[in-house]
Image (cartoon, rainbow, N blue to C red; front, side, top):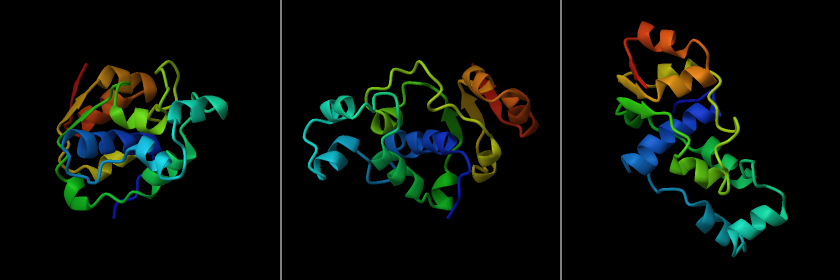
Length: 145
């Protein structure tokens, strides 16, 4: 199994495979996960525990432990970097997208995606990870803003 170095990069891949392509199953639902642990109102839980702008430990643990088979990683030919991903809401249900909580810090994990051809949101990626445009170009990956 592939080991990701950058948690936020892994989440972008999870978004593509789990919530976009629906090939990485089952789809994780933080609300359902927390309900199974006795939390009936997720938003109230987040507010009462001052967790509004953080990744909930339960979601982080799930996604960090999630193994993505290399066969599925090989199907990723396109990634989108966008603050509106569902995976972000599954990690931080009241996150407003106004901070760097999910910023990618490294592109080392590109090695895990042998068939990646297109990155949408390359300008956002460049902002998060300076030099990203050059790294993508050097790998023959098209970046679209």
